[in-house]
Image (cartoon, rainbow over all chains, first blue to last red; front, side, top):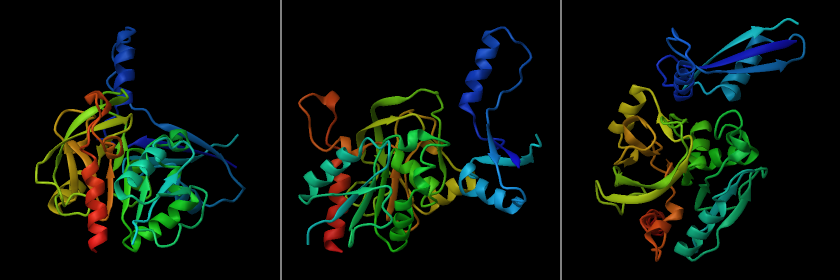
Amino acid sequence: MKTRILVRLKPGVLDPQGRAVHHALEGLGFDGVADVRIGRLIELDLADGTDEATITAMCEKLLANTVIENFTIEQAGE
Amino acid sequence: MAFRAGVVTFPGSNCDRDMAVALEKISGAPALRIWHGDAALPDRLDFIALPGGFSYGDYLRSGAMAAKSPIMRAVVEAAGRGVPVLGVCNGFQVLTEAGLLPGALMRNAGQRFICRTVGLEAVNTSSLYTQGFALGEALRIPVAHHDGNYFADAATLDALEAEDRIAFRYTESVNGSARDIAGVLSANGRVLGMMPHPERAIEPAADPALGGADGRKLFENVIAALASA
C-alpha cells in the first residue's frame, strides 16, 4: 500500500529556501510567479490495511515537525 | 563530590570532544562519553550535554533523527527528574525536536551557513546557567550553523518572555531568529538550548580570532550552582 505524505511549512512561516528559488526563477526571466513554497514528499510502502491513525502518528512523531509544518496523507494507488 | 557530566555523541556530532574538554578543564573532573545507541545513561549524572554537529547528516530535519535515538529517551526521562541538560547548536535542535524545549530551528533567513563570533546579551540571570551574569551583560561567543533561525508562534514567544525563559539574545543581526533569541530555557530553568558555542570560548587565545573566554562563565555557573545545591 503506497502512501504519500506531503509535508509543508505552515502558512505564515517564512520559507527562505522558497524565497531564494523565487528570486532564481525571476532571474531566469519567468514572470508572474507570485510566491514559491518548498515542502517535502515522503513515500511510504505500508502493509495493506495500515490505518490512518497509525499513519497520522508517524507524521506527528517523526515525519513532520508540527511546530512549523502541516502534513497531508494521500493514498497513492499504483 | 566530583562533578559528573556526560556528553552524548550522535553519528555526525562534531563538537562532542570540545564539549568534553571544556567541561573537564573547567570542572577538573573527567566527562563521561555517552553513545547515542545506549539505552541508559551512566548512574548519578549531575549534568548532560548534547553537542553541536550534524547528527544523522541533518536527515529529515536538523536534530529530528537524533531526538528519536535510544539515548534520548533516557535524556528526556532524566530531564524530567530535574537533571540539567545543555544543548548547543545541533544539541539545541535535538532538544526542540525531542519536545524538551518549545519552538524550532529553521534555515537561516539569509540561506547561508554562518560561522563567526557574534554579540549576545544575557537576558535571564536566575537559571543555574546564567545566575553569574548581570542583566544585559555583553558576551562574544562563536556561532557555526545553517539552521539557527529560531521560530515559535507569537503566543509561545510571549510566554517565554513573560516567564523569563529567554537566556540570551543576539545583539546583532545573525540568522533571522524571532525576537533575536539565541538561547531558551525550559519552564524549570534546568534545560538550556543555545545556538552559540560556549565550549569554543573557554580560554583567552593569543589571537582574538581564535575566540575568547566569554563562554567559560556559563560552565562555571553550572558547576558552582550544582556544587552548592
